[in-house]
Image (cartoon, rainbow, N blue to C red; front, side, top):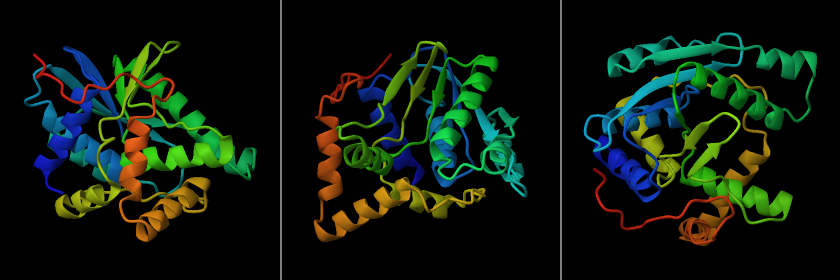
Length: 247
């Protein structure tokens, strides 16, 4: 995927779900992985020509794993002229040494998002952009069906009343395969995950299930995504598939 394609897909999501307003200060959550670095490129590119002007910052929640160096990410942010903040935490120590959590993912996500949202507010941002893509949305729907008994997935945009903060997901129309292509084409400085349960989670199970369904029934992934978009999921905003150009 080339940068122009990335910008086109990202703008489609932003326009159809009205994610950006004039004067927004948006924080891009950077984990160091391919998805969040791709989102940084997308948002920085859009900031140059999008009709509604907005400011960008980038923020990383450092979970405290040893040998996790975000220097390459800092250099990329400097090259893109995006202010970058690193929030130091002891989340890894709390999960694996203090609490010795056998299933740490849920608590980790809660603590990480809490730290991120607090930092974003302190930075003066009114919105935070997460790097969830199309595959993430489909996998979340399957996890919800299998383990919760409901048809659900996270929303393209959400307002957090308690934090007075909006969450947006501008890469929702992008396949993970395209992001991998973008990573390789632009040599993104990916910081590898140090989590000891990485690749052993329910999320990984859902990812492999989607891959298998697509192999056995070509087009299944696209049809599942369409079902989500048309599913009137509680909490989802109204989609405008033919938005006028914002001014």
